[in-house]
Length: 197
Image (cartoon, rainbow, N blue to C red; front, side, top):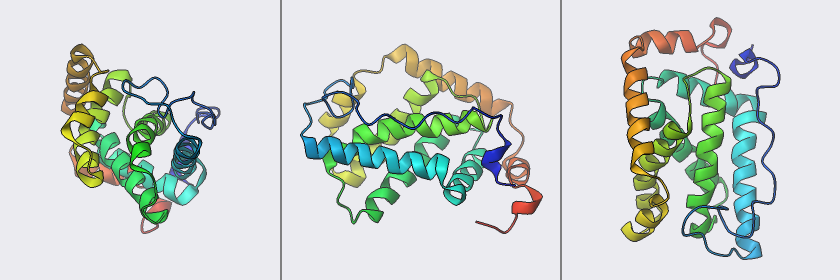
């Protein structure tokens, strides 16, 4: 039985809407008017990420396994998987995703990865965890795609310090209640799924 099917019916979020406004990233601080090509590219990246997370059984099961194995640090697990997802999508696209699209698409994919985590009860996810995941994701994305420190700071300016502190506290509190990683990894792999990927 695929891991994704363990969730109650109706818990998978609806597919993302094609129109997020007239800027890349919608209401993200520092958003600039998007060209039609940039908006189209953004929508394709988000849809491809959504499909990998929720509609492709193999990649969905891999994502669930990854997240459950790293449940001791929810924000880091979300950030790490989102990085793997967006760089994988870019590789698959021949490294042709415009740099202007990477951060806004990553922000939406952080939310989708968080929704997947919550839907399979990998760990609790709230806005604070998602914001902290985005903070953790930005440095490696910036390094990978050549964003400047100013670009990262402008993007992060919309996330307040209280939310970040609450996310860190939530992650630490959750981590202190987790069994050792090896026990979680064994529990995350269903007997009929061992050896498959």
